[in-house]
Image 1 (cartoon, helix red, strand yellow):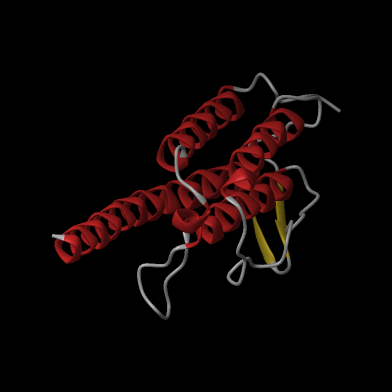
Image 2 (cartoon, rainbow, N blue to C red):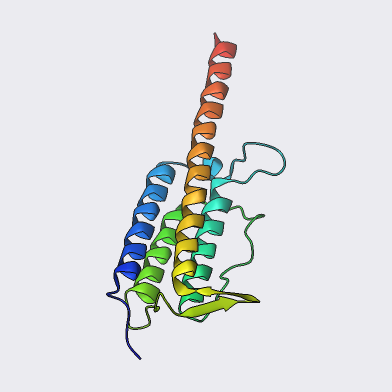
Length: 164
C-alpha cells in the first residue's frame, strides 16, 4: 500500500494544524487553574479547559477517520474541570497525532473514501474538517481569554476601590 505522507495536501494539513496548535499555546500560556476553568456565563458557555479538550479530541476523530480507523478519543468534555498543567501536554499529544497519522506510512490518500457512522466522505474532507473545527475553536478560546482578562481586571479594580 502506498504512503501519502509526502502528498502536498497531507503535508499542508499537518503544517496548518501545527500552526493552529501554536496559536492555542500562545493563548493559554501563563494562565492558571482558575483561568482555564472559568466560564464567561452561567449556562451554555464553556471554559478554555473544556474547549481545548473538545477541539483536540475532535481533531483526533477527523484524522483517524481519514486513515480509516475512527477514534472518538474521550467522551465529550463539557463537564471537564482540570489543572492548567494538563493543557500543554494535551497539545503535545495532538502533535504526536500529526506524526502518527499524517507523517507516517499510514498517512491517508486524500482522494480515498472513509467515514464513521453513516457519514462517508473523502479523506481530504476529513482532514479539512479537522482544520476547520480546530480553527473555529481557536477564535472561541481567544475571545474567552480576552473575557477572562477583562473580568479579572474588573475584579481587581473593585478590590482596589474597596481598599481605598
